[in-house]
Structures are given as structure tokens and as C-alpha cells.
Image 1: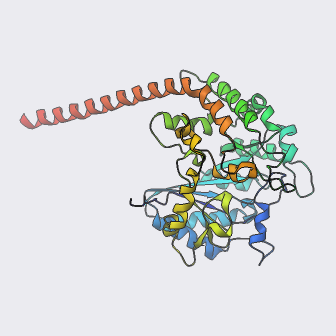
Image 2: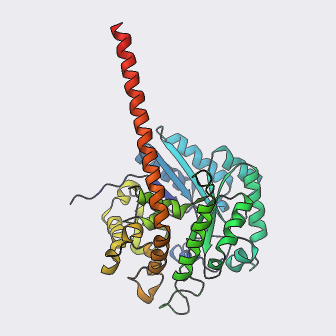
Length: 402
């Protein structure tokens, strides 16, 4: 069977590598500094930035997106990202370009807001909720909570008209507060929400998941409550808030692939570019065995379509037979591979299998109804377009015979 060619649609860039001005309890990326011991401070050079942007722009098709992440990417300063935009313009060939900045929000100010608004960047803001939830695990280097500063900057961005998504890590603690979290974000004006389940290996017992990791049953109850809140806020059949997980599930009900990679059939639709130009298979697998190459010596499009990346993507299907026999398998495909790797107690069993079964059973009737309505609307739109085209043809012919 011929290998499926993957177009270069997106890259995830780590311009500061693992460097961050926070010391969150559940962070998995700070330890990546052990991979880059040649320097204590990790920063992408302008030459590396230009080469990376040049390759992405020249090797992509009509649309491409850059995700700027960390560590904490804002440590590079606004000037670095202005250069990134300049390079996108310099090397672009008329394609649509999207930029997303994921940030903890501490360094944001009015200059950042003006830049983000000017170039229509989407900000994923790591704000775990109200103070008692956010400050449970998100500390600065001095061990102090960061909620007040992050919330203040969230309001500043919204006032400046910047597009902001709430990025919420769901842990053993926050999973108990679905309604409070949902209403908190709505109250701030953050109506685009992404909820990320946290699973990490216990450093004191490497055979188990860390204590702060999200329990599968708690995750199931959390998402069910969240789904009901989301549906109850629909107005005239349309959502008034956006929750990425549910929107991704909806895709599978209308015959499209879920945009959230955790729900895709295969991993590896993008690559990660580290500060020094190293390219890796995935954000959660920045490890030597998943290194695909370096942009100074290899082409990104070739690394994306390499045998190593293909093998990485196919490994997602390495789940027990009972998973593939499950009625919900084509909705989750086992979830994110890292969730079962980070929980070594059973590294072939999907961590959130129980949660997914709970969630899909609950949302299935509503999703089927929504999908039927969507398909009917699509059919009506196609019929109207076809009718309009026929009408134009007849009019043109009438004019011709006259």
C-alpha cells in the first residue's frame, strides 16, 4: 500500500525551548532542558527563524499555520515575532497564513496587544480558572500564585479586541468544578474554551501516574456536565460558546476527521521545531528517538513524510483488541498516545477509556440530531446553489438567442 502523503499544513514552534518564567507543578516540558545542555538559556536565532519560516512558506500549499509555544514564547519579545511576520510575507506565495500564540500571559502588555491585534493572531491563554483553581498548581519561580496577573492581562487583551481562547488544564482538583469553570470563562468574555486532561508520570513512583493526574471517571463526569452546560446555552439552534472537544466530536458525526489530534485515527499531522532547529514528531514526544532531523540539514516536508514519522503516527493504533471492537472506537481511536505512555501502570490501555465511553454515550443522541440538521442544511444550500447556477445558465442562453 502506498504511503499517504501529508501536506505541510502546520508547525508547532518552540522559540524558547523549555525555558519558562513559571514553575507549574504539572509541567512536562521544563525537564526537556536536559536535552539541550550546551546552553543554559535557550533562544531561537534570527537565522534559524528565517530558515524555518522560509521552508514552511515555500513547502506549504494554499494555507498554513504556525503555533508558537514553549516554555514561554513571549520571552522572545515582540520584535522576534515581528520578524517572523516579515519572513512570512517575504517567503509567502499568496497562501493564507494563521498564527497562534500559546502563553501563560505574564509578560503581556499593551505593545503585545497591539501586535496581536494588528496581525490577527489567536492567543491561547493558560488560565486554569478562578483563583483557587488556577493557583493550585500554577506558580512562578518564587512559588507564588499567578492568577491575578494572568486574569488582568486576559481582560486587557479582550479590551484591545484580541482573539483569545481559554486554555484550561484539567487535573484531579479542577475536575470537580466544571460549572464554576464554564461560568467563570463566560463571565470574563472567554467564550472559546479548550480543556486539556493532565496525565504525567509520578517522579517518585515511575510505575504510576502522578497524583495530580486526572482520574478517568472524574474526567467523564466533568465533560458530561460541561456538555450539558454548552448545549443549554445554544440559542436558535446555534452555540453561543465554543468548546473544542465537543466541536471535534461533531466532525466525526458528519463524516469528517476530527481537528483535535487526540481524536484522529493516526498521530503525526504536524511536526515540532525546537529553538535550535531540531524537528520532533510531537510536542509530547520531544525525545532523541523521536527526532526527525534539523532544518539546517533537512527539509521539513520530508521529515513530516519520513518513515520515522509514519511509524510514530501508526503507533497510535497499538491498543488492545477490545478497544478496536468498542462501539466508540471510531470516535476516539484510543485518545492521545501520551496519555497511556504517561500512565505506565498499563501503557497499552488508553488512560481515558472509561471517560470516553461515558462521554460518547451521553452526547450521542444530541450529536446525531445535530448532525442530521447540519446535513439537511448542507443539502438545502447545495440545492439553492445548483438552482442559482441553472438560473444563470438559462438567462445567459435566453440573452444569446435573442
